Length: 213
Image (tube, rainbow, N blue to C red):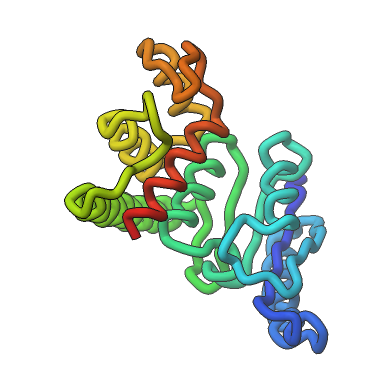
């Protein structure tokens, strides 16, 4: 039997206090789970903006990844994901890890041909979004260098290394994956070490993108 998690989110403390939006999401999700005959557990992020992976969503994705649940149901796409890129990442996780995802407002279910087609379209838009982010970041870096700004960490964090980190991260790679690539390529860290840490990659990326903005 499919064990489903229903995820709810409201975006402000006021909404969390008076329940605006929560009841409608809960009713939609519960109806969908009942229609499918799926046992349902509701998890919610109340008063959260959606600008990050909030605690209840992070916990839900962790349960799904480790097989403690089999499906995620959300009432609306914008309750689950902050962007098309973020949505595509969650959809990819569902397909890779083997759990089902139902997005009620889109009528999307990854177990159906229609749902798979919609997921492919979202992936196409996500790729476009990544390309645009990368383009804007590169243009910002170039403009910052033209003004004589120092980009990223000093010393061994060369412009080429910073560009490589920004490009890889904007292309969807994790900081840990980028760190492994730099280590494997024999690139020295800003501390002169042969091993890169994900935290070092994160600091360089954040510094570069902040200065470029």
